[in-house]
Image (cartoon, rainbow over all chains, first blue to last red):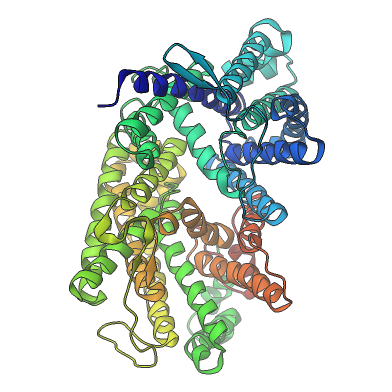
Length: 290
Length: 348
């Protein structure tokens, strides 16, 4: 059994990672909850944002935590355009056709990245990358703390948007009752596009926040898509609070499994959790047991 | 859909069937040409052509197996690499450790995959999991296997399992060892067998029940179809068929890595063919597989010949094909192609 201080460190680091995971999954959950679209390209959007951060750092010496804001705006616009000009045409197709459509987009983005950047890993190295904050027995990586802080701020902004603004309320109305929203005269196509834009923007922020913690390769997409789905399913598809809760659960359980069993089994824990939750709480922990 | 060729056939009675259905003769001739070309290909083709054709047949076969579950019964599996990998590892593990060849071990591979398919189906269908949740469950099990096999040292772990390769020029039918043409004909027999089996199934009670479930499960249940039983049949048959492809793959490729064989990319590769060719059709998986290999691997080969070696082209083309077909030809390329060639469009 590892020392108590080690366990505490791992738990806190797992929570910090979990917050960023939660933000990443939030976008997927919002898109599913409102547009009813299973975004199989979510991880590829995140990878695309990571490469954006890598390029911004290498060419413009921009810190990923600064380029984050630009990435959010760019990806928001990209997501809006993608939904408005393209995906909206397919919202009435059968579910499997939409899944295959997004899967096709995911394959294309992943392989265009591979063509453009090659298979070698890229990374961003800032001056503070290896620094950490010391709090008694706790040693916290600065990057992880900043990433979690950025994720928390973004999540809070998003929560405020959905609770306080008219557009946010209209989007929630769309999620609750798409037909009713249409009858009431809400611009559903526009609201769907805003939702996809928000989903893309949040995953871009998550990508910029994560870029210093991993080696960026073009093949990261599917793993992140799956991770986002695991989180969202654990928390409950379409539930925003659920996505955050799911992120924390997965972040923590991965960190603990890595410490107590072996680092290589950590994703096995999340997929095992996915199978169990799917089978016994198919609507997720916050979706209620049927 | 009704074949326009059958109407005059009925009107003309039995006096001149050949004249009454002019399309029939053409279909027979085309099928004949296809059979002769398939049988003769290794005699005329270069080694590259034979390996590309073997790949096309492999994709056609696994596509046919996947199509039983999704195309016929409407259950979208995104984790079929699980059965390819299990089938491959069972046969290869037995061969490496005991020297027993594929003719014996393939049955065990089929049994293991059928059991795993039955287990997943039992859990999913008993608990009424469908749609996205079912697709994610299939991915979860494939991923669990991928990570799990990384930790089985007796099967090589992440470093891979390698099958000893003997003299490639010598044909050893019992050990399924020999030149590339042997594997080509082996895969041809499998693909033809799967086509025949699916043709029979579509005309049987199972085929009609599956399509009823695919179109409207609640309605199928309401008319008294035991949807659980028939969905189980689809997933067990599909996984058992895929196991044979896995065993073939092990002896053809001679090296297995959990990272590759259970990978999500593999599952995607399996489904692109039948979707591009035409979901739920008999010839869709074949047409799709040939299209993928001609455009994907053909382009890669041309680029390589021109001295350009870029990764990602092959799968990028797969993605593009999947995108274009999903947008513009939701039924796949076989139905319109069949009409153009004078075949009956078999979108049932």
